[in-house]
Amino acid sequence: MDTSFLKSSILQFKYYKELGEKTIEQIPEAQLSFKLNSETNNINTIVKHLSGNMVSRWSEFLNSDGEKEWRDRDDEFIDTIKTKAELITIWNQGWNVLFDTLENLSNEDLNKISFIRNQGHTVVECIHRQLCHYSYHIGQIVMIGRVICGEKWKTLSIQKGESKPYNSLKFSNKKEVKNFLEN
Image (cartoon, rainbow, N blue to C red; front, side, top):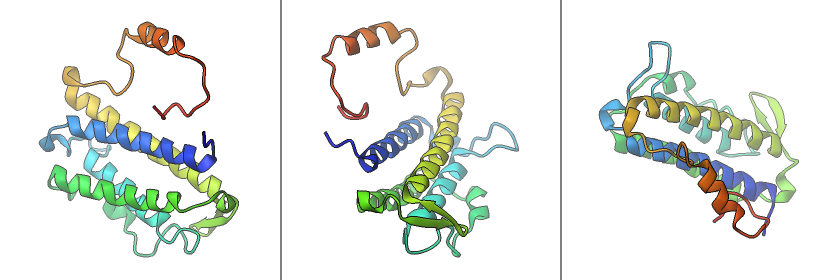
């Protein structure tokens, strides 16, 4: 088994991408602009922000600052998305840049320095910073999705009341070393 930091990080990013997608799939198109109140973001703006951040941070990685001059971060929080198809296109633009970059890094790159707003980070620190940032926003998307769907929500993890049977199944298997995201 490849236990490298890069492989583990890529799997973790894919996991959060999947949580976001499974949430977005459940939400009717008309509800993607739903806001809990005037001070919160809706799913459309969170996706715009995530994608804008990913494209900025991971484009020309190690060769330019992660906060690109062409990025309009403030615009990311203005809801201009009209359809779920447009939302998915914007969503995938960001993730594609992220995965293209991470999949082309090697273990030798992990201690190289990348700058974000002129502040140097090792590649490991960049990955940690963005993994935390993206999971934070994916959590917001999931929470908004749960509010919108109410009783129709399809859980993304172990169903309530099903922990004991789930654990029983897991403990009935042989012990093995592998990433929990690998089947």
